[in-house]
Image 1 (cartoon, rainbow, N blue to C red):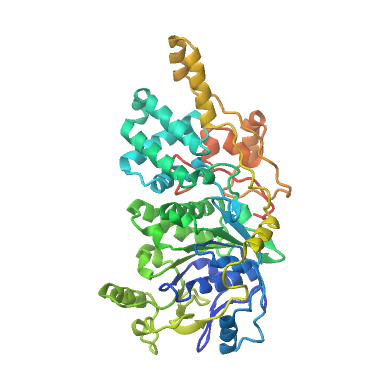
Image 2 (cartoon, one colour; image 1 turned 90 degrees about the horizontal axis):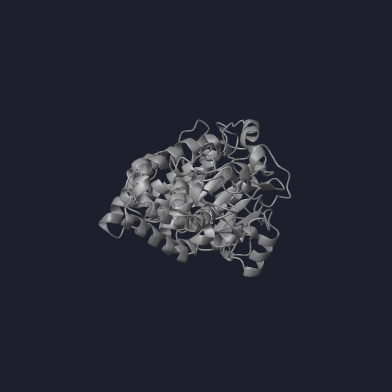
Length: 522
C-alpha cells in the first residue's frame, strides 16, 4: 500500500474510496445504534493514520482503545475479510495511539485555561442565560484590561467575587452587574467543579502541536476517553467545539493539501447542535467552512443526518449512511430526509434500502477527483486491521507510559494568576487606612509574576498560527518577562499578548494564547 493510495472504505459493485486530497472536505457517518458506525469510524481513522495523517477522536464507549493493538482475532472480522475476498491484503496491525482524559484517569491529562475557553463557550458549558453571560463577559473584560490571568476555576471565582464587591465602581465603564447573576454563575462554577471541571481548567494547557504527531511514518491517533465526560453532555460538546475552534485559530493556512494535516471525528455530534443559539451555529458553520483551508477534515458521527443543521450538512462531502429504523411517523420522515441528502442512483430506492441495511452494510458516497459527490452505492464496510473492542487496563497503562508526551502533562502547575493577585490586593487593602484603600482600588493592577513552565525535552520547531513578528514582541516585553514561547504571551498580561491568536469561538474577550513550541513540524 502506498501512502498516497485512496482510502478503501467499503466494497460493493465497485470499491468505494476516500481520495486522500479530498479528506479535508469533511464527512458524515450516520446510522441507528448497533448498525456499525463505530467500526466504520475505526476503519477510516486507521487508514488515515497509515497514510501519515494524525487523527483526533472521542471514545464515548471505550471501544476505540483497541486501535492500539493488532486485530484479526475476532471471528466476525475474519468472516467479513473472507466475504469481501480480502485475505491477501488484510494484515492485522496496530496504529500509534495517544490516550487523553480530561480527568487524567485513562490517559494524559488534557487541560485548557479559563481564558482560552472564553466567555461564550464557558457560558454555554455553565448553561447561563443572556444576562448571566453578560456579567461573565464583564468579568473577562475587566481581567483582560487589568492583566489578570484567568487560568483555573479559582481564578474565575475570585474574579466574579471581585466584580460583585466592586460593582458600583465598575458600572460606569463596564455596565451593571447583578448580584443575583454573580451568585448564579458561582453556583454553576461550583457544580462544574464537583463534576470534575477543576481538573480540566489549568496548566500545563494542551499544546495543539501534540495532537499532530507521527510515529514511523504513521499518524498518531489521539483518543479522548469520553465515557465519564459524557455524563455531562454540555461539557463534552463544548470541549470538542473549543478544540475545533482552537485548531481553526492556530493552524496556518495551507490551501488544499495532498492529504489532511489532521482528521477530527466529532462523535455524538447532535450534542453540539442541540439547543445551540443561532449565533453559535453561525460560528460553527464558519469554522467548518474555513478549517478546510487549514488542512483539517471534520467528520461528524451521529444517528441521523437531520441531527446536523443544513448549513453544516451541505459542507460534508464524504458520507456513510448505516441503517435507520422507521417505526414511527417521525422515524419515517427522518429516513426520507436522509435519502434526500444523497446523489440519487437509479438502481437503488434509497428510502427503502436505508431500512434494510445489515450491520456493517451502508449507503456510501464520496467525493470524486473533481470534488463532486459520487452517486450513492450500497456496500459493505471493510473491517479494521486493529483490534475491535476495548483493551485491558494493563495494556492502556503501557501505551500511556510509552507515549510521546509521557510525563509532560501529568504534573499540574499553579502559577501566580488572578486568584493570587486579588487575594494579595485584598490583604493590602485591609492593612491600609481607608484613604489608602481608595487609592489602591483605583490603581491599575500590576503585572502578575510569571513562572517558567517545565521545558520539553524535544527541540523546538517553527511557530504556528498567524504571522506574528515575535522578535518585536520579545524586544518590547520579553526582556521584562524573561520568558519564551507560550509562557511569554500568556504571562505578560497585556491585551496585545492575549489577542494575537484569539479564538473565533472564545469570544471577543476570552482568547487563546500562542502555543509552546514542539517538534511537530508546524
